[in-house]
Image (tube, rainbow, N blue to C red; front, side, top):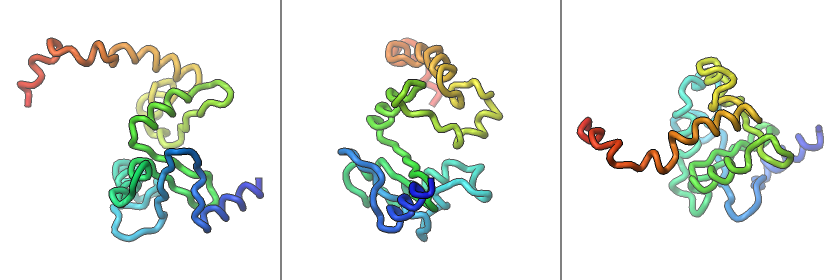
Length: 160
């Protein structure tokens, strides 16, 4: 346990990317001037998650390759936090999330406030088999065959 903590601190101080592969995220510095907020929840910004996301990507336009849309925060000896706005990466993570050995476990910490509003067994908060069931139930209304039917949205464009 302590050796993992020291290893993470060393990686953070030296600037070693904790991720590997062909889609490397870029690092977000914890303290950087000119950004809209700190890039993590704290007592002064936790009620405004959009500002936290904006802080993650405030300097991403200067990045190249996959680092422009995939960022990570590595601070205070904690495990790294990855945030992605790349649809392919999000799709890959979603397909590898579940209750089976070797799959990603959904991190429910950022959505704890959502659980109070929607309930712990909702798609936005649940994990494991409950999450898989909720996802399966909600998939059909949002399927490609249901969403891309012009006749269903004929009058919708007139509302603009």
